Structures are given as structure tokens and as C-alpha cells.
Length: 343
Image (cartoon, rainbow, N blue to C red):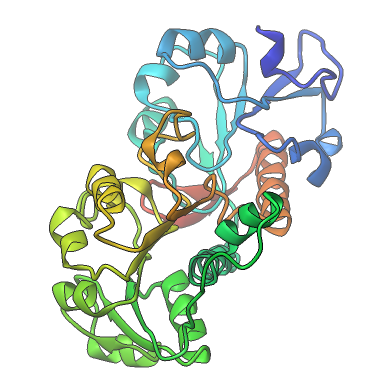
């Protein structure tokens, strides 16, 4: 196995009866710090993969073929049938939260491989959403760069009090975004396919049509789960309705927004800017045009990745593995987000 994909010191003792555990995509190198993998019963050895696995089923199968357990970090490494059928020793998968779009649950069921998640916890995503909004309104990144270049007071920021916040989706996170907008004294409007007037009112928002939201908003915030219905939902038409002084904020999922249409709008200054945490391809390619656009604030898909959230995930997945080693299945994911406990 290539050395660059492994923690330099495996945790546990290696012998012929060991259960081998792979913790994938630990980019920030904190899984071993936040959860005590040495506390697992029996003979186990845990390897931490600090880099993204190489592309290609063959390459990934070679690296993962000897592991009994895969601990995944959200949806960074897809586990399709084509890969898992090349992993003869795979017996158990642990995944954060209670849903994962990139695991083939039908195949896991056919092989008797349990997939277990973690208990719910309030998401910190709305905090980064507001960091993006405020950074754009106050020109934080522009002024920061100017200050480092020896300049002083080069741009003028704007206030958000009295502005219009358009929230697409008032679920668990979107409702938090709306509440903060109200606290700032903004007019909050909202839309989603299934939203009711009652739900909007509960969140301090006014339900409007989709087109009206894009026309009226100073800040459009995407707060939807990615699905067949939402992929490409924010396209050239919707972005074209936005005013030249409006901003698009996407901390949800990259494919919900037509990235090509967004790049064109930014390039032609049809909108004022964008705050983005998620992309069509992740990690974002080094030569991607978004990286060179000054009217953007870009983050590397970290809205939900705080120390507190990581600690909850990794300790939860550690307990999933511990229960499985003890012959129990807890927090099982059935592909639809339904929680079940099987003993």
C-alpha cells in the first residue's frame, strides 16, 4: 500500500486475526486525536488516510482490499458496487450522520454489510453561511489582501440591515439562517417546492415564488439537500434574474447550482459576487476559474466541519465499530435515513 495514504504508526497490534480498519479522507489529521481508536476490543489495527484516494476503481480496490471496516468521512469517497465487489474482506461501514448519497446500500444489503451512522447534532453550517454573507458585505477578503499589500481603505462595504435575504429551503439549517437574518433586521423571503405559508411564517419568512425570490433578494442562500429534483435547480435562468448588486451563497451542494452559469455571471459582473463552500468537483481543481475571481469568497467545503462536529462524528462511528465488534448493530442506515437498532 502506498505509504502516503497511511498514518506513519498504525494503532493496534498486527497479527493474522486482527480486524483492519481504514479511516478514509482524514484530511485534517484529527480522527486519531478526537476519538480513542485504541479503546476498541480485541485485536484491531487502524490506518488513517490523510489524502484523497487516487481516482479509479482498480487503484482504490488495491488500497482497500485488505480492510474489514471502512470509516468514511461524509461523502468524500464514493462506495459504489463496482468498488465494493472488489473488497472481499469488507464486513462493516461507518458513516457520519444518517444518510450518505455515495454508498450503494442495495449492494451492501445483498452482501450483508451493515452501514451505520451517528446520532443527530445541530449543524454548524448556518454559522459559515453567515460568515460568507458578512465577508461579502464587508469586503473582508478584499480589504485583508489590500492591507497585506500596504494599502488602506480601498473599498466601501454595505450594510445588511434592511436588505432582502432569500432562503431556498427552510429545513433544519435553512431555518437557522432565516432566524439570524431576522435578528439582523433583514426582510426574509423563502421558497422551495414543498414549502407552505405556515412553515415560512414559523421561520420568520414570507413565502414567494422562485423567480420572485431571485429578482428581489440581495443575498440568495441555497439551503437544499442534493437530489434528482434539486440538481441544476439554480441555473442560468435563475441567476439571470438576480440584480447586479446581489450575491449568491451556496453552502449546500455544488451540483444544485449550475457552476458554468455562475462563472459566466461573475465574469460578466451580472451579479455582485458569490460565497461558495461546495463545488461540482471536490477538491476544486487548481486551475478552476472560480479561484481567480476577486468577487468571490471561497471555502473548501468546511461548513459542517468544526472540531465539535468532527468529535461527535468520529466518536459516534467509533461506537458503531465497537458495537459491531461486540456482535451488535446500532444506528443502522437503510439508505433512506431511517434509524434502526439491531441486536
